[in-house]
Image (cartoon, rainbow, N blue to C red; front, side):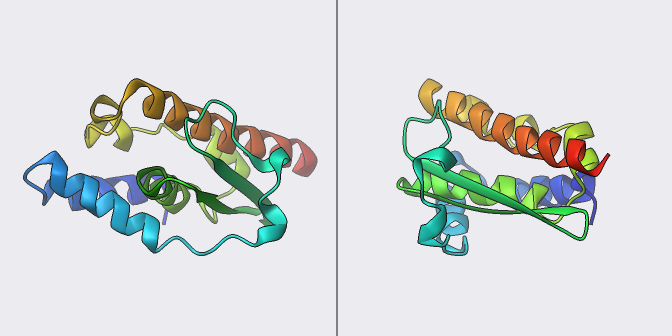
Length: 140
């Protein structure tokens, strides 16, 4: 699936919920389904700066596509990470760099987060794009 198709799928899923409490619960459930990150990647160098809670993000390239693993010590943040990984996992670095991340606004995520969590969301997206840029440079 393309990044655009995955985002459209997420928007459809979130449209089923009537209020933000249900959406928060769904995001938390997504976080519970996030594969466990190897402890070897829970290093300070993999921490995302700018997040209120601890978020570890690791990336590897396999067959010209990026694969991410991540974790957080906060349940809501872990769910947000799960959403981002769903969008960006197994995508080409160039596609990640060119991606318009419209689902965040479409589902109202940023406006329903506290300012510190919204800043953390921006920091997570920035770090994913930095990984994509680094791997894209290596492949070019």
